[in-house]
Image (cartoon, rainbow, N blue to C red; front, side, top):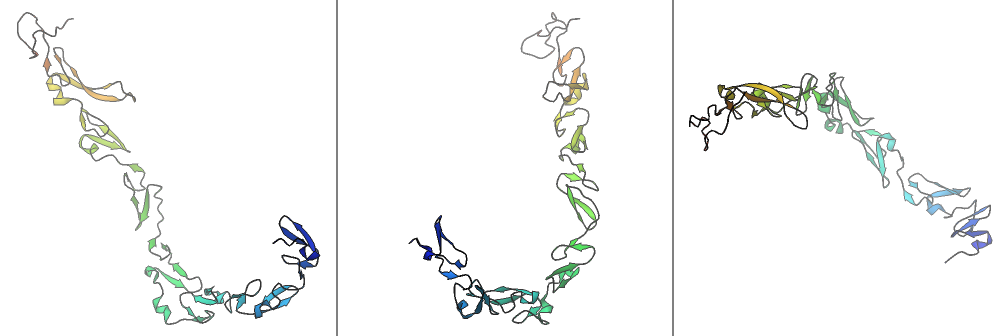
Length: 263
């Protein structure tokens, strides 16, 4: 129901009462110096319209259970009115050192000491991490590696003292040399990994293996056979016809006298 009259102590605007000075509450029925729950649920005193809760209680009307020391002496946290103590502390307010528990404290990997106040490992100079298990390293291994035991351990595909050299595919090593991730092929070999023979059979001893530009999207250089006069084929193994009337099939084709060399 709508409090249309707002107890005659305010105006009803936008779905709620806007109380006149000196009044409060949903229906403007409580004086400013009164508490909404007059006795603060028996867990506090009402002063100037505000509940001041006794130790162990909290809330606008002191309706919630709280810890006697809400901060738990700085050594724990309050949960449903009970102090949950951190490692090495005990007691209702976590104010007592727990000497027995110190034997079970984290050992910080043997590279630091557990601080009871901070509740964390304080690592030795050359160690880091929440448990002091990571050895610090002065080396800058960049974005392609990380430091371990005083040296760079490179990510896959990278090498070098500071992991700055890009590796090639292992196939490159058979017929080429790797230069920072690019495979430079030996004479007679082509392809990204230098695994494709460009001068098959060493041009059959009837030609020379040379690098030439071929029509490709990148206008790349490829090793190809340039045949001697009288020979053809990818490996210069095909002998061309040089005399048309000798009735000898020099190129061993099915038809005679296919090729004719001219000046």
